[in-house]
Structure formats: structure tokens, C-alpha cells
Length: 88
Image (cartoon, rainbow, N blue to C red; front, side):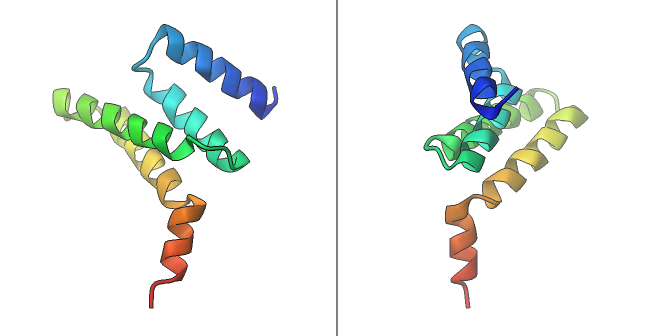
């Protein structure tokens, strides 16, 4: 399916399950890719949820993988890349 359809699917998933980390992660990544607002906020929400998962279960390898993906996406946002380019 197309990215717009995927966004609608993730919106529906989050209505049913507001703590669904993957939905925030992927919806945020799609929004960032499309240049739509709210992508960074979705990624930050995913990071908040993932950190809670890690706090409750520090041996959850999947959570650490999700956290690395979320941080990679967040660092790759246009606003963050612009600030990196401006560094001396």
C-alpha cells in the first residue's frame, strides 16, 4: 500500500492501542519522510514508551533494537541534520 494508506492504518491502530510503540515509530518515520508535521513527536512518543518497556524489563532485546531505530530516525530529521551541518 501507499504511505498515505499506511498512515491511516497506523492512526487506526493507535486509536485501538494507544501504547503501540511500532505504530508511533513507523507513523513518525513516514511523516518525516513525507515532510508532514508531527513525525518527530511520534518518534519521541515511541522513545518514551520504549524507555518505559526497558525500565520494566531491562533484558528486552527488542526494545533496545526499537530504541536504536527510533534514535536513528530522530537524528535523521531535516531539522537535526541542518543543525549538524551548522556545527563548526
